[in-house]
Amino acid sequence: MSLGHFEKLKIYAYTDPGCERPAGLPFVVMMNPENYSQEIKMEFDNGQAQGTSGSQPRFKLKPPEELSFEILFDCTGIIDKKPRLDIAQEIEDFRQFLMGYEGEIHQPKFFKFVWGTSLMKGICVLLNISYKLFNSNGKPIRALCKVSIRELMEEERRVAEEGRRSPDLTHYRIVKDGDTLPLMCYRIYGHSKYYLQVARVNGLSNFRKLHAGDEIFFPPLNKSVK
Image (cartoon, rainbow, N blue to C red):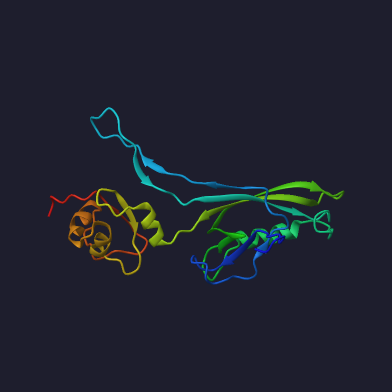
């Protein structure tokens, strides 16, 4: 960034989670937000075993992070020297940009947020619009939009960060096209031979007939069972 250059927050839209297929021009804010917040959570399993008086919280998972900030819309002309009658259409265009349904991908778009450097890739999970100022006809001329973005994380990075390959952990996995139970067992336990245990736990009468979208429960590994 060159000295004196004022970098504005930009929101780039894409039609794929890897953010490689652009979907139109980016949205550029009128004024940079005063701040933004980042929410980072950890979830723990507080289940208590039968016959015990307490339990040690056990790490369950790390949900995707969320990024929140506020974007100002103003048509008084005070900021950009371009007075307009109202901001209704600008707000609607912004709403469609963030949350409009894309027929090609059967869901809203994916986004990359850049402010000098890339902040986050994600999907918009919240748009809260507060109208702050009105003209003599009651039309809004200033609004503040709170935007919350949920992080998108590549599968390889997610697995690496969670470190959830340990056979001592409980796993839930969604079946994808081409998945087989032995293959899924190999990914989690490091060996495919435990597929019969998993099939019994899930009540699968035919482990060969997995369907994309099914959720499979993979229990802590019991190596004593053959």
